[in-house]
Image (cartoon, rainbow, N blue to C red; front, side, top):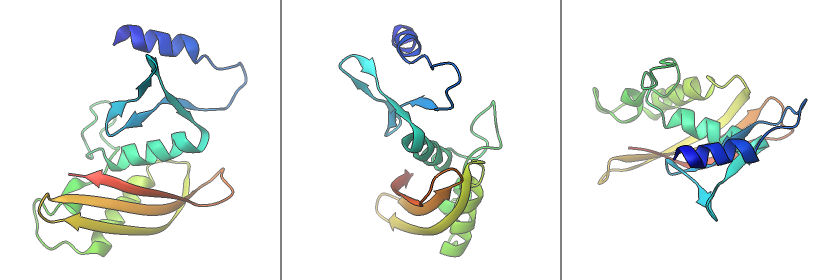
Length: 142
């Protein structure tokens, strides 16, 4: 793992003065490796990946920043049953707005698979430095 990260860091050095953010590509919680190389995302894809990551992080889970994440107790009916979709949407908006680059959340849809107790979140939002809104679909919470 250390060798992979070292190779990633070496092959993805930024040009001086570049404002482009580059992150390791994450899919379903795993780093994406193709042809023995870590894959990266940048620009809009990096922003969308960050938003998905915030939503999929339980608030308080990260020891180095306990203020990042989603209140899962508001989404999964853990402590309380029958939480309204509006209340769930407020929790999602609060989480997404932890990213200072998010300008506005346009809409959110929430669907639940009762048998697997899995929640799927779709949303459309606008980033401050992007010209148009983007849709992020199928963010899985379980």
